[in-house]
Image 1 (cartoon, rainbow, N blue to C red):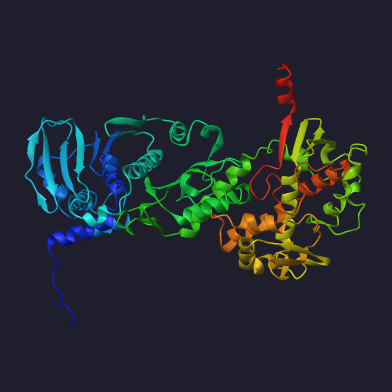
Image 2 (image 1 turned 90 degrees about the vertical axis):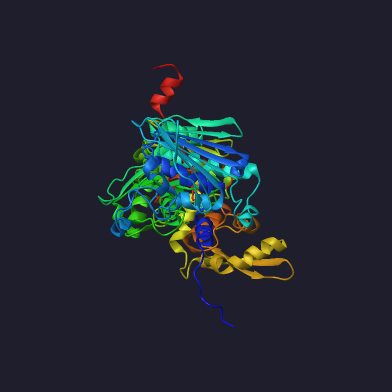
Amino acid sequence: MHARIKQLDAATIAQIAAGEVIERPVSVVKELVENSLDAGASSVLVEIADGGRTSIAVSDNGVGIAREELPLAFARHATSKLASARDLFAVETLGFRGEGLASIAAAGKVELISRPAGVEMGARMEARGTDVSEASACAAPPGTKVVVRDLFALTPVRREFMKSARAEFARISAFLSRIALGWPEVAFRLRHDGKDVWALPAVHDVVERLEMVFGSGSRGALSELSSGDAPVRIFVSGFTSTPGNDRPNRDSQVFFVNGRLVRSAQLGAAWLAGAGSFAMTGRYPFGMLALELPPEDVDVNVHPTKIEVRFARGNEVFDAVRTAVARTLRATDPSREVPAIAFARAPASLDVGATATRSTEGGLGQHPAATASLLALLPRAQDAGSAAAPSASGGVRIYGQIDQTFIVAGDAEGLLIVDQHAAHERVAYEAILDKAGDLEAGAPLLFPTIAELTDAQAAVLYENLDALAHAGVVIESFGEGAFRICALPAGYEKRRFDLAGVLDDLSVDDAPREGIAHRNRLLATIACHSVVRAHEPLSLQEQAALIEQLRRCADPHTCPHGRPTMLRVDAASLAKAFGRI
């Protein structure tokens, strides 16, 4: 029979609401700390016992709550942050639902002590479930202190899902340090089991707070963002890590929207899109990104915990973030000081152009009419050092290799040092990206290569067969564990192509599995395992050809994995090193 509809009792309703808002100890800390910030606190102390499972206490020096209003603090949907339903569409505070304390009380025992500044005595109340005590007078410093004990005692099933005290405390510490990034003017202190764990004093310079959270080395690894030409109503600020300073996951990407710490796949995608080829494949930029925009353009009422938001103009927000990140990374590129000297277009009479046009074979570069196939030149490396140093554009001359890995060039302004593998990766990546999907993307091999693969490698291959073919790499099964490479991107040498290496790179756990990110990673991986390696001898002509190819790239300063292709040592640096200045 169909069950009859009936009204739930108050205790059950409270526990359902608590289940939505209070998932674990860090949820309690989040609700209480956000209340403290909304109260204008300049100092917040969080004290934890047993990872928050035994007790959680949050103290602040905010405006406090008057004794006569204290009972409303535990009433459901009672708040000082909304006046009407219209305010829901322009929320300017971190909290607004008016159910945080009520939900916490439904999960454990809560003690609330508060005193507004200018009032002689504070007030104290206790709540457990739907039972709320009378407010009583007590001595207290200005501000508010909330103590939560025996979390989930009223919902024991939820307690079973908690991790160890160490794991729960780690979540709390991570949250508190993250929210502190967006509120540098507020001092935060964390204690666990009676011991001070860390303290973040209030600072005027947000970089100091960044160093406290990300480590002392972050000052040199982070660059400040600017909105630039973003829409007037969208202001983007914060800091992103520079090329080569990245992390293995997204855990160190922190987002704020109008001061609210949020989780946003959209902002993360925009950040990664802005990083583009500056971000090493499988690695992620880190830092803090903050958006300020009209409250009516942000819907913060999409999740009970207020951790997610929705944008009214999502495309504009995405473009503003992407543009700010891309502009910042381009401006902080290690070779930005003299790109015109290193990569100015060369007149046809210069030696590099002449060297590059000696071959009639098609090349990997995007301008085959101007330069020959670099790969056609590279096999003849046995004559390295036998030729006079060729000239490059802007008066740059090629001097040779260091450790058969770095190409050294020079001009009147200083030295240019090029990583030959990273440079060749960039050349190959842009060439294959330019032709990906074309009918001529792949060139059939006269003598196909046979590759033996492990079961794991074969599984990755089958997942990527179509994508590889789209890039010009055509592979067929050739018996048990064997595969035949039938075609490679035009201009590639089969002796350099490492199929097993490509598949191993594509199999890592954090590798994207679909979309543009997957395509770009696949193309970058093909390029990486098809070009000149470190410790490989190159003739001066081959080195000149590589630099000529590189200067024609759209993004010559980094390889597709985000590593720099070149470094500049200017005359001033040399003079300083020799004590001349």
